[in-house]
Length: 401
Length: 174
Image (tube, rainbow over all chains, first blue to last red; front, side):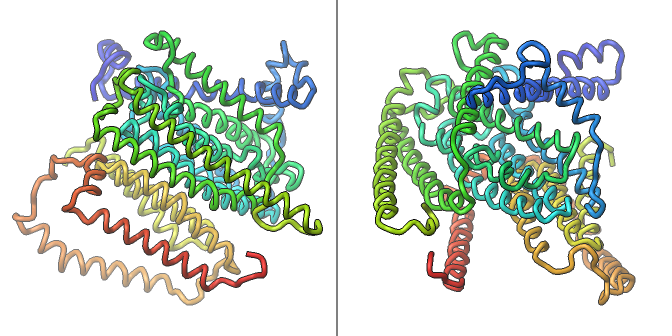
């Protein structure tokens, strides 16, 4: 590994090269992981303020100007709370579950490219790494549910794991499109390949699919039966108090913002924008675009009602999975045909806007056609369900309504 | 043998795999046993990274730890006595002695004569490393059996789902 920058300065200053490399890597890790950790502090305030405004109230406004220091107050409160461990709980697993949950979200930030020059690690399997690490979160939730030694926690954990494992499938299928278009699983390459045209304009259905399945993966409304606060009290984290609950809490909030950033990185150009070659401006564009999608996610969370578990499963297996498979087949065929007749560039990295235009028009047309089919199908199904509901006595609602 | 960072990483991942495997076999609590299994599989994923197969490492974590081990956990939760297994039928000492003796027999009788003393089999580690692109190309090339293998696994999945659909209890509502 070459020794440049800080490592070089330390080496010239007299340190052993191995130690200099280690220190420079450590500083890099601290900087890369500092971004999400500082973001989560602001995110909690943003979430509470926006939720409050949508619910026609003000939100935190006492602690600090506009309630900005509310998160610190919450942090202090959680830190000084009594750390309760239930008597018959599995101590090691009970204490480890919040850590694994937060780690699984934080590890995703290691592959996100902040600017054209700054990123944690340029893994050649970036997308796969991201999905694999996100699946560790499922493991932590089930461990939490079991180790609490509480039937309600276990029940909550069962519902959650089925939901999370099922919704990984449309998420991975929808991520195949950026990988296909960029020709690489590395997130850095995927962002570079969007220089000519954003993937979200070429494949909007994939972006929507990723958004929906990511909402489900984090347990955000309408899929928030994970901690249906009005039903199961708190789902799998009933028995958690103090800072352990704080870790789950922070992990969930950070995960939503991580999904917004991933949506931007995969589909909406990452750090591209005017003057993107200056690192600070690129970073600002990334944050701005991610904030827009984060706001949309919060907006949905605070307005729609909750779905039942059977509705959620039906929606996934009967609607999202076939749609995502059909989406991949259609887009892959079209991209290959366009590349064979030389209307689309083979290597999208470095392609210009004009070169990408034919491919964009064809893919957009295909997506609009698929969208029309979906909307037509929704209207037909909706009409059928409304007619059936009018004609039958309102006793029960069948599965799949 | 020089101690490089790769040697240290190899030792660390091997220890993780072996300790996890030992935990799976000897833990009295079944649920903790599945957690040890996840630890052991994580060590195996690390070994894949050392063998310059990052794709397989990520797939190992995603499929084995993220799906199969969780399935194990579900199955474990459905058994009756999870947290207090008594080793009723297992005399652990005799088992350990038998396993060690068998392993020693294998090493001395088969592995040592064939691999250690035969100079033809002592070749340096290959410097050719395949990348993920090579893995992808082997799916499309006509010389490799990777694609038929994957199609066969898809067929098996369809078969299992079909078996479940045929054999499940049917209610009045679907």
